[in-house]
Length: 503
Image (cartoon, rainbow, N blue to C red; front, side, top):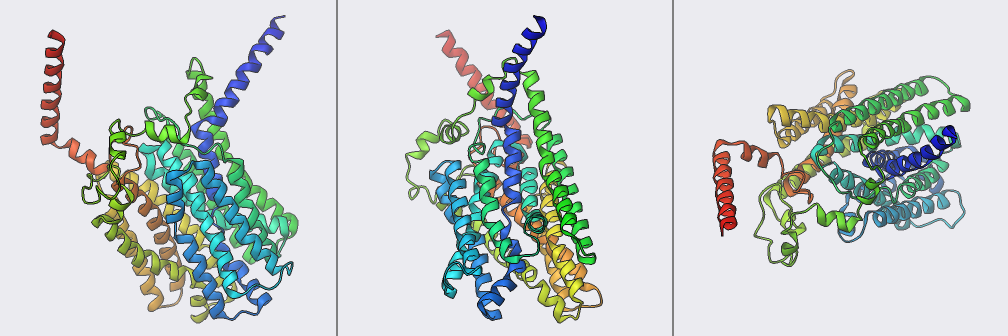
């Protein structure tokens, strides 16, 4: 009887734990990592572009035109941001999945001859739609995670953007294991795989009520960092081995299994953390009740005076900009001097880095490097890209909190490293392309993470209630003058409340 009673009590407890696990922040983080790991299909254009060129008889200029539209779609994220402002997260992910499947599936139908040969402008439209879908995955997962972990946004952005940088290596291993060496099937994999991941976690990704900072939050992020480093090193080792050795299909399956092991290992961390939280809460089933919808959570994470601010139209307060770190409207941010500076730095820095990355193969060929060597250092660019993204997230957070070094200065250093890589290409010497690819790939990844983090700190993310502005506001609060002012304010408010009680 006792054993039966214990089993009956254990079953509801297990069910409540599974509910908390599925609806918890850490499982949501795991889903975001998988979504971002599948959101880098644009980095594989160089793999299947030769198949497009051979199938349709395109010349290099036509292929470059397709590459331009691919970059245009991948880097124009205004549409996804505007849609995310007025729709819930699940709709953003659903729309991105449909766009991804539509764009790449049409390319696959064209390559396999299942439909008539499309015109060049149609192919450019297809790849632009497919590439633009990754912005919806970024918006749906990245912005949601930053709002759910507002006090660790640097680490969060570094991890998520790092997984995007590794997505090319992940796709390559899965593609060889599932389809062999068929480049046309790679396009099909890019079409259905990212959308399937987004649909699996479509209702898991949502903005939650955020209380005080989790006591083990930073430690858990470091666990995720170590796992991502293991994934990066494994992908690098597999890439180098596959360039030098001939892998059988069974070997490719084993390599894909290893990659999947690293991808799903964060699930163990999520289960462990949710179990610790579940044990410390007296009523674990109440956590599911605390989960609000996207619209409710967005309202509750703001200040009470947000309702009054919403009554003012966006055109009336363009010139009345808040302080740095507070919530800006879209027009306030676009017309601010900070955004103009960031735009110019991004246009020059990321533009030059992206051009070098896209043409690294032609650069190596022009410098007389062997084909196998070119293929190796081009493949490793995604690994250096990953390390740049992760270092920019975790490194900038440490430099900012401990040594008060602002992120814009770190971004300037990243731009300087990129310029050194460009100089090594312009004035080459024996083996300079290896160092150039490392510097450019690392700086390119660092700039992406720093850009998103700086924007979130300068223009806000509607998390003022739990993340008191940006680091600049924290510096102001720590100054002696502000402490005296805050003390006088608190004293005056306390005296006022006492007088009211006497009355």
